[in-house]
Amino acid sequence: MSVLSNRHMLIAALVAPVLAVLAYFGIGAIVGETPHVAEAGQSYQLVEKPNCRYSSGNCGLKNNDFELSLKVEWLDDIRVQLILKSVFPLDGVKVAVVENKADEKPPVDMRPLSNDGLSWSLDMALPDPENNRLHLVASSGSSFYFGDVATKFTLKEKF
Image (tube, rainbow, N blue to C red):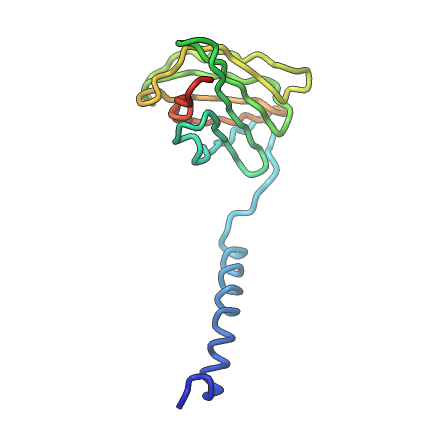
């Protein structure tokens, strides 16, 4: 007797994937966290994207709709320019290059590249990609977004 000739097996083979997909989205809707609008005065953590862990020259940070992208451009052999682009206008950005989480170096203000608050830059010494991390705080609409990023992405070869 073939599996395809047994109608119970045929119906089960067709219905099981549909039920699995419905259960996946149903559980996600019931248990999953729903995104909410940022509240003034609150702070939100940014998660680094996977491209921050590789020598790409680019790094992304994200929290729901709020997204920042970092890019490194070489100025000379020991200095780089860190360029930040945002999806939403920013009121200000502060950056600190630290060696470990307990390190408390004072942050440095990034300067705006345009009046719209979407592009920012900072000239800095090339960080040690194996040991240093980048702590970043961005302010947008009275909300604060903070992130901790590996500096491995700064290793991209200069042109």
